[in-house]
Image (cartoon, rainbow, N blue to C red; front, top):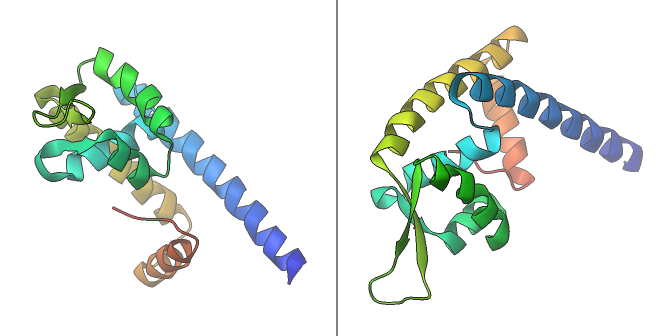
Length: 145
């Protein structure tokens, strides 16, 4: 089992690296963001009001609080995200999508959906295949939309 487990883990890591490069190239070339930036923006876009506490964003993305802060900084500089303080607790900081951030996220999502469709169409993946893959990745802790 250990050789099979190692083989599966190495294949998964190689596939993940390949997907990241492909998404980074498309999102970077068309929108000037990385896949990491996109996933952060996507998670914010799914949150009520387009905002989340930074600590909750870190938890949702599987990152550290400092990792989220580093990821948000360039997105704040280009006006896609803003920092909001909690009116009741000055220790709490929110990350919020700006109007520009929402608009750009819609464009980025269309690009990401096209890229994903190309990736999975190329290998003739069925809906059943995709469902099985999503389920298996979920068992490893992968979360979807």
